[in-house]
Length: 77
Image (cartoon, rainbow, N blue to C red; front, side, top):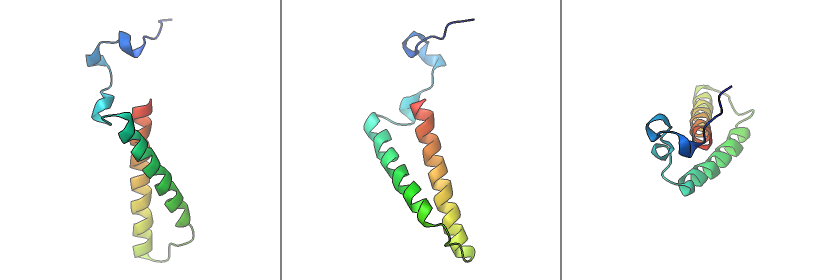
């Protein structure tokens, strides 16, 4: 079995350019805080879908939350 190389041992052309996702840790932390707020807001929507407009609001919050969490996940891994 091959041994996994550490990031510093990999040719930069073969590594993910995480700096393209977040320029620094502070930007990641800001989005992490935003994700926590979105998750809390998402929970408050429970039981509020009454019509097309409220469903649209739910779908928008859900999509924004999923995209942000995905971005955070990719950067942190």
